[in-house]
Image (cartoon, rainbow, N blue to C red):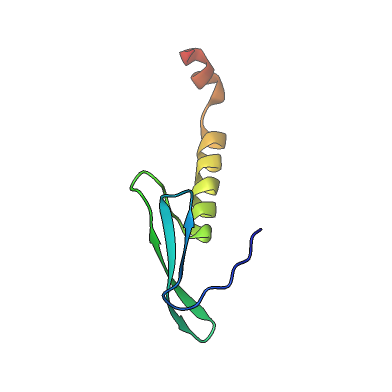
Length: 71
């Protein structure tokens, strides 16, 4: 993991097309702005983990044999 220090209104760039800007700092909260192309999904980690779990549950609940018959 790369750890960087940034102040309010400072930014960093990832892969030439994603910019992350520190918008505000209040106590232990940091407001972050993310500017990325529409095709780049951006999720809060807890939402991302819920999506992964839902996908895994959906896969487990599907009748795998029925899916195999499709191929």
